[in-house]
Amino acid sequence: MNNKTLAIIVAGGRSSRLSGNVELPRADRDVPKQYMMLAGRSVLERCVDKFISHSQIDNVLVVIHRDDIAAYDRHVRPHSKLLPAVTGGSSRQQSVYKGLMEAKIMGPGGKILIHDGARPFVESETITQVLDNIAPAIGAIAANRVVDTLKRGDSRLEISATVSRDDLFCAQTPQGFMAKDIIAVHEDANKNEKSDFTDDASMFEAAGLAVRMVVSPSHNFKITTPDDLARARSLVEQIEGLPMTHADIRSGNGYDVHAFAAGDGVILCGHKIPFHKKLEGHSDADVALHALTDALLGTIGAGDIGSHFPPSDPQWKGVSSDRFVKHAIELVADKGGMINNVDITLICEAPKIGPHRDNMREKLAELCDLELDRVSLKATTNEKLGFIGREEGIAAIATVAVSFGARS
Image 1 (tube, rainbow, N blue to C red):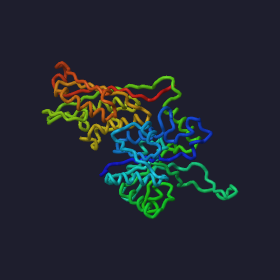
Image 2: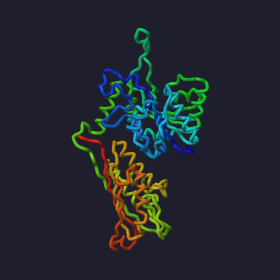
Image 3: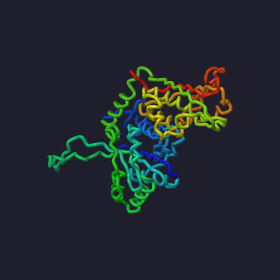
Image 4: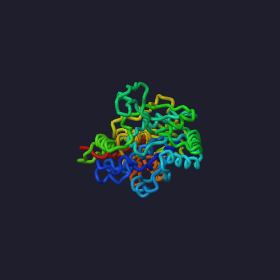
């Protein structure tokens, strides 16, 4: 792993409190909860996609039950970030341990997030905040404030005390740690046969290490009971506008232009083309990716690139523009959107785009997680007219189509 960030998603449970329950529809009774369907997509698929689409996650490793290999292959599509699944142990703690040992083989050096495969509604912002709060010997977890009045009951279920809810939280996932720290903690617990921990944070605490909490929404809940499953399906209906009467497919467009300056090449679609000039402007001045960012933001009414990454802010100087596209993709994914296709037109007299087109399309396809035939890149001149015709700069037009499931 070196300094990469790995998300381990634990999905090896047997759903003893849910599967087989007579309150469930018959189609759900013999299915582990992580493979139950929420509006046409499994719980686990939705969960995995949250981490794959996050720009700060380098790899995702799913720990599954040995009997679920075929189900996993059906429900989770391959992705460049997704590592081969590993089979877990007889408990959650053992499954996490097996995932961490796989990470150790890769050479721990970065951060590790551990997430329950039955929490499909974790938000991108929660993942970001957990990652931001991790430090050496300091873990971080998502947590939700307790809002109900708490009562302590005796053996007869009579109230013996009212417990103050001040400073009380319900632990959620993801739970994040430096890789070396959490691997060492799990190895110690395994060596000493300590198996009564309810989550990874409690193991960290027992080792005398600090854990910070990130306040997370209540809808980042774990599907455990039939009521949870009903709540999850209701939430998906609200998010995706079900029941379906027609597809919710939105298009967005973006336009950008940058002037030439003295240099040694222009960056377009993340690919540097050798040239006696460069493009001047925001970040690395990748005019194509700037237009694409605006097009993606347009599908969710989220403003433009300047409102998210102000050109006056020095932290964006020279930054690779794929960072802006990834941010826009995350925002779209948080709204339930999936990119259908990308179409970009470059307008310039020079440099020649043709010799570099294939490489640029491949970079776009990888960036947007699309098949190559869903990525179009065209180039045209301005017939020597205007500032483009005078070879003073390059303009780009981007169009995207994004599917948001369905709406009534």
